[in-house]
Image: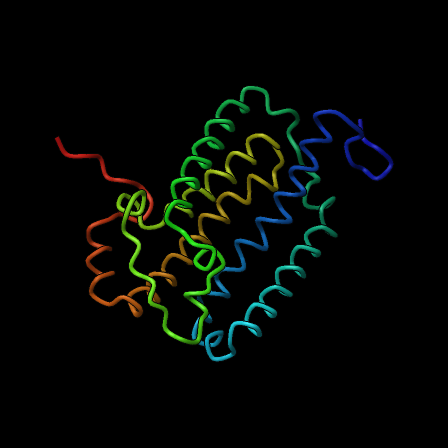
Length: 207
C-alpha cells in the first residue's frame, strides 16, 4: 500500500524504500566523489586543503540533494520484499563489516578523509602493507561493493541493483588513478607491492 506521495505507507515496504533512498543519496555522491579527488589530485594540491575540501564538499551536497529530489523517479521500479534474498544480503553485509573492521585497524582519520592525497606538502605516511593490506591492495573498495550488493538484495529496487555495476566500474577507474598517484608517492616500493599483492581478490595460500 502506498501513500498519496507514491511512497510505501508503512511496515517493511516503507523501511526498504527509505533504506533505498538513503543508499542512493549516500553512495552515488560518495562513489562519484573519488574520481574528482584522485583524477584532479595535482590541481587540489595547488589549491590547498581548505579550498579543495570546500569545493568537493559542495559537490557532494549538491549531488546528494539532486538524488533526493529525483528519488521517486529513481525508485519507480521495485520487486517487492526480498524473501530468500535476505540471506545472501546478510552474508554480504557481514563480510563488508568484517573487511571494513580489518581496514580500520590500519587507517587513521587523516587517511580516511584523503589528506595524504590532497595535501600540498609531502606526507611521511609509510606504505600500508600490513594486515588485510598484505592480502589485498584495495580491501575498502571490496567492502564498498559488498555493502552495495547487500543493500541491493535487501531493498530489491532496480536503481540500487544498477548501482552495483556502476560502483564496480567507477571504483576500478578510481583504483587506476589512485595507484598512479601511489607510484608517484612511494616509487619502486609500491611497484613491488603491486607485484606481490593482488588488487581485489586474495590469492589462495600455496600448500
